[in-house]
Length: 203
Image (cartoon, rainbow, N blue to C red; front, side, top):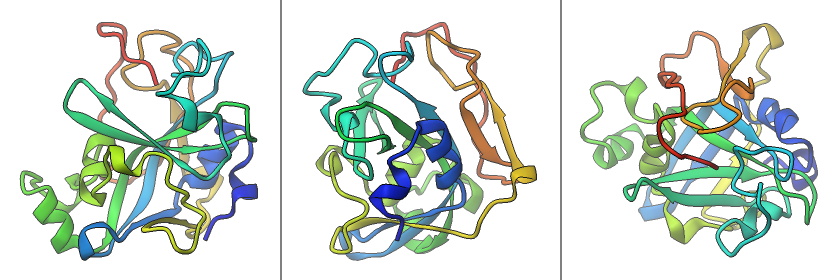
């Protein structure tokens, strides 16, 4: 399992740690494991696209640490998105989990995402990823580094630097060109890029 210390780093560095790692969910009585192939980094007071840019609130409290916890929020009135908290306790930062490849529990994942046209589409996008893992508001604040947690984070095979690509974050209304979205080149599960600015979407 990844440790709290390994995640208590700058979100941009944590994003690289998370690429290729495996998020395991035992929710709903079945095991679903997803290899993370696309993530986005968000800081706090110096990142206008972050949920924490204007300070601490009941909604973003988890994002202020400690590292290794899951920050889950509801967006557009219909979807849940999940983030792994980074940095140290009291300093906000997190990495949005944008997409993954299902590597275990494919049948259960398909039952949760029956509209997926292929295996690659099961967790292709942040809402789809939370859907196949069964994550919702109930998991906000859960400790991914706790061996007894129903949702845990494991180190995967290291991703070579040459296989990591970066670009602008998706769907944000400000700081649209900050290249803090990272993905594994060649993965069919990486989501489609959509530039923000039309709708107010902050994380």
